[in-house]
Image 1: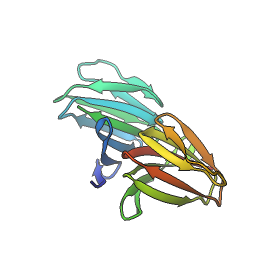
Image 2 (image 1 turned 90 degrees about the vertical axis):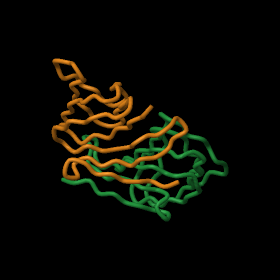
Image 3 (image 1 turned 60 degrees about the vertical axis):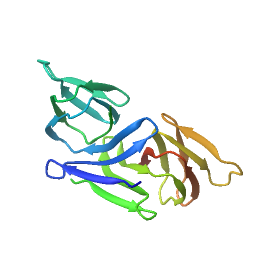
Length: 94
Length: 94
């Protein structure tokens, strides 16, 4: 068992992947910016510190998710994220 | 602004340091093991996924902190942590 670190978007997003008691998780941090993420599995994204402003697949509008809130994205979708203050998240895969 | 990744205890603990809206934070993950951490600042440790079993400075017994709970450690102290299932945490410095 080991902890792998991944970087995305010119190192503006970094995450640590691990196996939790509840399955695979990544614990990550996003610097301010705008990002498009593609899912390969069903994901639950939980904001643990800060705010993610998210346009979910098929949505017309951005919605704010702050510390302690979460959202779901199905597999094989993409979603848009705006970050204005550096934010930590957990992503649970299933 | 950038995200720095640090590793401790033979890579069994890794963390990403960043500046949140609430000040400096590290977002980290601990593999199962036993660790002793030394503080240089006042810290609030928040368990965001999993469980930290902690013996606080001066305490005689270990206490369990699970997802959503937190504990404080003053500067220039050390505390003992046991991890039985890989756990993600946030550490806030002040």
